[in-house]
Image (cartoon, rainbow, N blue to C red; front, side, top):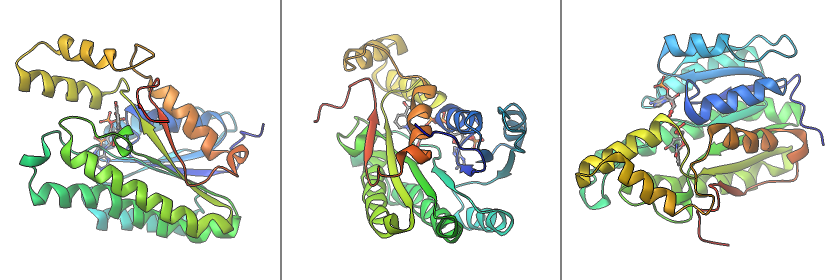
Length: 261
Ligand SMILES: NC(=O)c1ccc[n+]([C@@H]2O[C@H](COP(=O)([O-])OP(=O)(O)OC[C@H]3O[C@@H](n4cnc5c(N)ncnc54)[C@H](OP(=O)(O)O)[C@@H]3O)[C@@H](O)[C@H]2O)c1
C-alpha cells in the first residue's frame, strides 16, 4: 500500500494542538512538507520546529484566525503563490457549547464563517494547484454529530451537518480531477477541546468532571476516549495515494460510539 507523502505539500488548519497537530505530525512522518495554520504564533513556532523531517522537509507556519475569513484568504493566497498544495486539512476550533434554544443568530453566523466560509476559501485557492498536479486530498475534521447530534452543542451540531453537505457537493465536482474530499468524524478524543466540554457540562450540572467523564465513557463501546493520533492515522490514509478511490465519505473515528450502520 502506497502511503508515502514524499514530495507532497500539506496545509493543516488548527494545528498547534489536539487533532490538527496530531495530523500534521503523521503527515510529516510520511514525508509531506507541512504548513501549519493557527492563531498563536509562539505555539506555531514550537510545534513546527518539532515536526518529523524524514526527507529533510522544510516545514513552516502562517498565523491565521478563522474568525476572520478575509485573513485566511490572504494567507492561503500567499501560500499557493509559492507552492502548490496537494493536501488540505480543514480543521479549526469548535463552536462554544450551549443548548440550541439559547443560541444567538451571531453565534450561528460566527460558526458558519469559521467553518464553511473558511473551508470554501481555502479549497478555492488550492484547487488550481491540485488540478495541475492531478492530485488533491481535502480532508475535513467535523464531528460524529453529522450523524447523531451531541447534547448541549446546538450551534456545533448545526454547522457540522452543513459542512458535511458542503463537502459531499464539493467531492462530486472535483472527483474527475484526481481530487478527493472526505470527512473525519471524531468521537470523544482526548484534547483540550474535550477537557473544556467536560468542565462546561460539569459546571452546568453542578457535578464533578469525573461524573461527566464516567457518563461519556459508558456511551463508548471501546470504553475509552480516543487518542488524537488515532484520528491522524485515518487522515494520513485519506491523504495518501492509497486512498485515491475513497471519495465523498464521512468516517467516524469514535470507538464505535455512533449508533448507526
Ligand atoms: N476532541 C474531541 O473530542 C472532538 C470531538 C468531535 C469534534 N471535534 C472537533 O474537531 C476539531 C479539532 O478538535 P480538537 O479537540 O483538536 O480542538 P482543540 O484541542 O481545541 O484545538 C483546536 C486547534 O484549532 C486552533 N484554533 C482554534 N480556533 C481557531 C481560529 N479561530 N483560527 C485558527 N485556528 C484556531 C487552535 O490553535 P490556536 O488557539 O493557536 O488558534 C488549536 O490548534 C474541532 O472543530 C472540534 O470541535 C473534537
